[in-house]
Amino acid sequence: MPELKACLFDLDGVIVDTARFHYIAWRQLANDLGFDLSVHDNEQLKGVSRMESLEIILKLGGVQISEEEKLQRAAVKNARYLELCKQMTPADTLPGVRAFLDELKRASILIGLGSASKNARIILERIDILSYFDTQVDGNRITKGKPDPQVFEMGAADLGVSASQCVVFEDAVAGIQSAKAAKMFAVGIGDPQILVEADLVVPGFSDFSLTRLKETFENRNIE
Image (cartoon, rainbow, N blue to C red; front, side, top):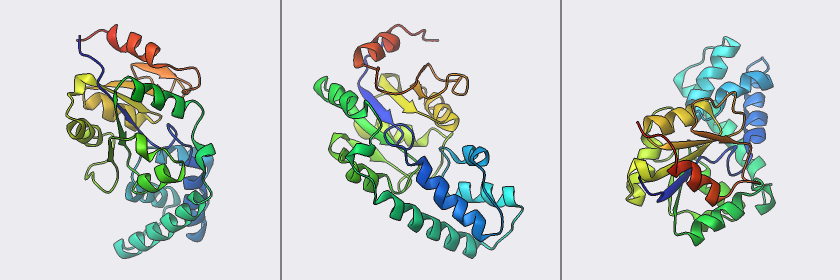
């Protein structure tokens, strides 16, 4: 049975909730283009890269713009998002996350970030947990977005561990699919009716422990 050696974390919705900031900034972009972006529509953007998110929004609004304008609009959205992120403090870290990271460190389990965000490092610094991470794979490094497995494969390679020794924590369907495509054990953070492809689903880290993770990881069925 493979031994647990590393945990790879998505950022938004797993470690910190910046989803509300993304939504505010994307909705403003849609409003600038003459239509609105509903909370329901915003669900399609979870775990998706910036430019892919923009394409989804343009399709929702039935709007066509040039490639140059797409880059300009995406840059304006990101600037708005970063301004909102500057309000963040360590208190914005989701409940139980810091305690769980402490558990991993004490057990000498490696910790990596696997996020499509190009602003991941800035956010980790704002909430004061950057020092926990042995590697960060983010939107500045990857060339393929989730559900492609690249982000987590790179994380495992950085840490020098095999896929079978990794656990991925994700809150989005595309992220769970990415983890499974990388042949890694996937823990969903959120609703089990949505994250049906995950090996384990928990509501968050408040009542979650390394002991429980190891029990589930070690007792799973390996095909």
